[in-house]
Amino acid sequence: MCCAGRRMAAPALGALLLLGAAAVGGREVSMQYNPGWNGSSVNVLHVRAVGRSDALHYVWSTIGAPSVLLVATRSPDSALSIDWGRLLSPAPTGAVWIDPPGSVVYAAAVVFTKLFEYSNANASEEVFYPTYDLSDFSWDSINRTMNHTALTAELRGVPTSDSSGSFSNGSLAFRVTAYESGGRDGALPGLLHTANSSKVEFVLAGAAPRGNGSRFVLEVATVEERGAASRLRSVRSIDDEYTPTIFETLSLVAESPNDSSPLSFLQWKATAYGSQHPTRGDGIRCRAGGLRAAGGTRPPSAIVRAYFGDGAGSAYSVSAINVSFGGEDGGAYQERRYLSWSALLGFGLPPEDAFSPLIVSIVAAALGAPLLLLLLGAAALLCARRRPYSEYEPIN
Image 1: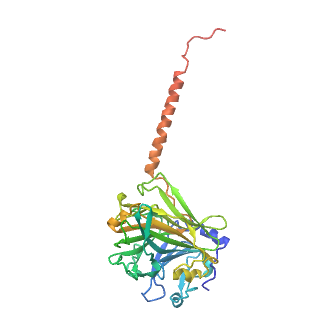
Image 2: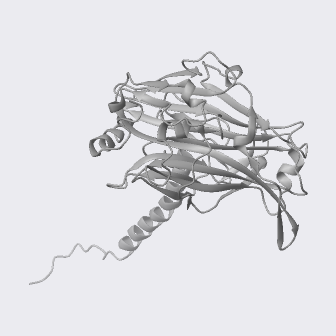
């Protein structure tokens, strides 16, 4: 039962493209902690966003590495089912499914796997410290942070083994925000969102760096059904009104194998911030490495294995990308010991910023003034070249 309806079909892909139309009137969003189980030793957060004729499911979990399963269905009555005994076993395959299985249009997953830390020993040598494997973290209960009104929750954890003591006064977190309708976040980086998306904010707070001028790199893995292809897109704009001094938006987009139409995305601005209440001066340089195929590497996430199975490389594909934070000297985190990076994830086409009214007026003025001068000059030239009028009739 749990494995049926998981493969994409051509009509289903067409249905996915209609998500934008289904979300015009907004969605009814609900959040549930550990659905179908009364325990609190592990974290599963089910966010369900229901439209007029469909439903989107976001299943967040810290059983293994922090991850989110994204499932789009063509039925507003579709529901998440979990076999908890199997999910918590060493072999969780088949423990998570959507009912009715035939309603599933598309499924994907995002896994936050590792955090790297490094510094420059000298101008030509980089020193890497032992990697923080996020599947080896101990996570607080999501239930204590859920806000059903604001539609937010937080996954916060520390390493189970911290020999360096770096996290004795710090933590690592992923803050989740769901949306009922389209809009724009008021806080920087001012991401534009739709009702088909959610936001995740990665936060490293209070952790002591292990080197002078340490910089950090977050490894992000994506899981796609067989046939879908992932692409990293970069869009540059002259408009920085909503994210001052930042002119680049990056999107990791999964595309349909049939017509390259977008199926899902992970989108972010090319910046992070060094403050809980960021301003323009708190920006931290953010860069993305190249997208690479992870081959048959099995994602370290129970919720992903429970839905997709163990067929990495055959039944589904895994890709990974590194997102790095910090300038050349790495001093931004050293000074404040705070780092936040926000990304949008969702279904269909990533949101695209239109030119703001301010930019439109500036461009109109810049283009309009020369055009006006040109027209006035042409009119003056025509007037000067006109022959004087004579009252005498020509002689035949």
